[in-house]
Length: 460
Image 1 (tube, rainbow, N blue to C red):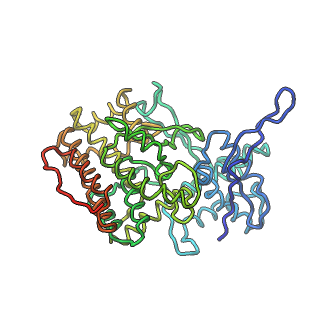
Image 2 (cartoon, rainbow, N blue to C red):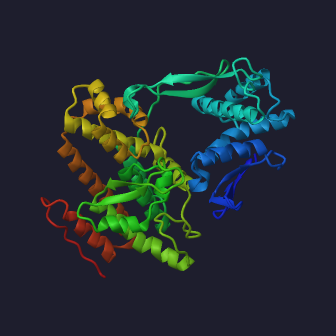
Image 3 (cartoon, rainbow, N blue to C red):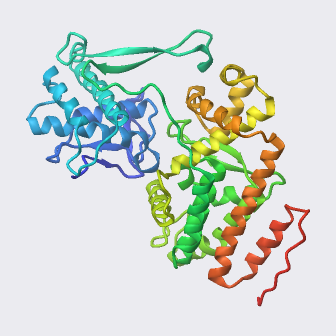
C-alpha cells in the first residue's frame, strides 16, 4: 500500500509572515511532511494540520520525526474518506463508529495492532477532525452533541509531576465506542543475558567485517548511553574524540525530546574502554570507508554501500536480525536498551540515598528539584511524568539487588571490560591480531590493577 505522505527537501523553506515592508519571511522546514489523497491530489486539511503542528515545535528530524508519526496516523482516516467518497468535513457519528471498528480489525496483511496503537490513531483522528471543523467555523463538528460525538476528557495529574504548585490538567480526545486503553504503562527492559547473546551473534554471525564491527558498536552505544534509536543514529565522531580526551569521560549526544527542531544535547558518563572501541571502529572502519566513498560528515554509524549516515530504522533492523540469529526468545528492540538503562540508574539512586520504600522514592524523585534535575538529565526525558512507569520496575529490581552504589559502579566497569573483550576477541579472530587490538587489550588491563598485564605478541 503506497504511503500518503512524502518529505520535502533538506533546503525547504515555509512562509511564515510578512515584514513591515511587506517582504515574505521564511522559516527553514527541512523534511517537512506533506500529505496527499490516495489519487495523488494534495490534501489541504491534513497539510494545514501538520503545518500548525510544525509551528507548535513538532519535530521533523530523522526522516520526518514527530510529524511523520502524525501523518502515519492520519493516513487511516484519509483512506477511509477516499474510499467512501466523502470530504473530511462530511462525516457523521455512524461513519466514525465504522472507522473505530476498522481500526480494531486485522490489517489486510494479517497484522493485528494493539489497543494502545488503535487508541492513539483514534485520538489523533478526533483531534484532526476537530481541527477540520474549526477551520470551517464549525466548532460542533466534533462535540458531545455534534456530527461526530467525540469529547475531551481531563486527567488530573499529581502536583509532583509538574513544576507548578497547582495540579495541572491534561486533556485527550475520546468517544463512547472507542476501546479502553489500559491505564498501566509497562516498560520492558532487555536482559543482560539477551544482550550477551546479541553481542555474541554480532561477533560470530557475519563474514562482512565492517557490518560485524558496526553491529558491535551499535549494541555498545545502545547499552551504555540509553539513547533513543534516532539519537544513536546521530552520534558524532567529534563527540567520541572529545570524550576520549577527558579524565572522566562524558559523551555528548543529541536529546530529541527537548527543543523541537533545535539541537539540544545531553551528557552521558562512559568508560574509556567503551570509547576506545568506538575510536577503533571509527579509525579502522568508518573513516577509510568515507575516504573511498568521497563522503564528508561527522556521523559514527554509516552505510557500507553509500557512506551516508544510517537511518534510525537501520538500527531496528539490525537488532531484529541479531535477535533471530541469536535465537533470543521474546521481544528485542532498540528502545528496550533504553528501558534497561533508565531502570539501572534509578536502582543506583535507590541504593545511594536509601529511600524508606517505593512511595518515599516516588515522592522525592518527582517532588524534590535536586532529584528531578538529576533524573531528567541522565535519562533525557522532558517531563518527570515520563519517569513514573520506571519507578515500580526499578524498586522491584532493587528488592532483588542488595549491592551498594559503589558495587554497581564497579559492575559498570566490569560490563565495559566484558564488552571490550568480546568485541576485541571477535576482531582478533577476523583479523589475526593487528597492533590496535593488542593496544586495546593492554589499555583495558589498566582499568583492573589487581590483574597482571596480558602477555601478547604481534607480527606487526
